[in-house]
Structure formats: C-alpha cells, structure tokens
Image 1 (cartoon, rainbow over the protein chains, first blue to last red):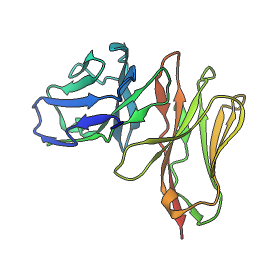
Image 2: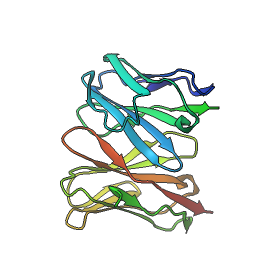
Image 3: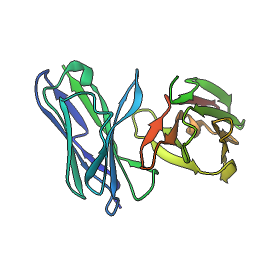
Image 4: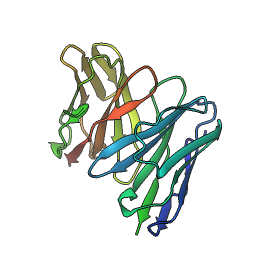
Length: 112
Length: 111
C-alpha cells in the first residue's frame, strides 16, 4: 500500500491567494483527519471525516478554512484567502474503525 | 490546563540507556492512548498503542498506562542514536477517532 498521499509537498503562495491541499487516504480506510503542525501550537486536529461525512470541525480556525471529502479516496483542505499566520505543515491521516491513524508526508505551506 | 501534557525536553540519554518519556492527560473518560515518533522534517509514525492499565511491551519499547493517575509513559530500552526524535503522546477523545496530541518530547541519544 502506498500509504496516505498528500499533494503538493511544498506550497509557497502570496497572502490573499487561495490554497488547496489534497489528500488520498489509505485504500479501505473510513476515517480521514486533517492536522496542522506549528512550533507554537504543536499538532492540532482541524477536522475529521468518517465515511466521507464531517464529524468534528471544531478545530477549523475560521471561515477561511474549508474541507471536503467527495468520495472515500479523496479530500481537500482549502484556505481562502490565505494569510501569513496560516504557514504551517498540514498533515492528512487516515484510519479504519480505530483512532490509530496513519499520517501522510505533509504539505509545508508558506504564505508570504 | 492543556488536555495532553508532555515535558518538551530535550531529554538526552547515552546510547544503551533507558529513555523514559512521560505524558499526562486531563479527560478522565479517555480510553485509548498512543505514542508517535516524529523525526525532524518527517511525519508522525505510530509506534505504540495502549488501551488497558498496565504495561505493554513491543521490542525495545514499553508503554505504561495508569488511568487512575491519568498518566501514560513510554520506555525505550537500549536506546540507540536512531531513536533520536520527537515523541508525541496522543489521547483518543470521545467516541470517534479524534486524537489530541501533546507538544512532544525531544529525545537525543548520544553515542
């Protein structure tokens, strides 16, 4: 299995631009998680889906952030408009009927 | 109070020694607990899970759980320089798969 696949690996964008991060979970997994990691705040859960349905989005920082999971093999996290404080590493993780989540390689986002 | 607390370190141990990493959590109803290892610039990797009070051993790693004290620990025996990484404690919160992570403890194993 290829594991959780995220794209792009690195993204540099200007403040105010829209950013879309993509994730393909491990085949057969039914839960998908989006995390953000910064030095100051550590690893924070933004949102998680179960069977493609958003279950908990309490970690989404504000309305500029949105996430979708149109099918079991694809999810997006969108930031519009982006701000410098959104700079972080964004991880996608997936699991099967368990909190034992497996992480993708992450997307390093820099907003200048 | 943070939901999951760890000493940030760095914790430095000599090669071959036992490294002891500690974690406390605030939610008494938490039922499952995890240790992730994260090398610099890499993603977190699950190394241990524990669900019941007591010890769980896997190779050189032992996870210990004490629900009454709301305390989880990870022991690494015969520490190797390749164990140098940040170790993240995670606690499952609620009925679903939501994991709350601690800030992580940086471990450095000196040859």
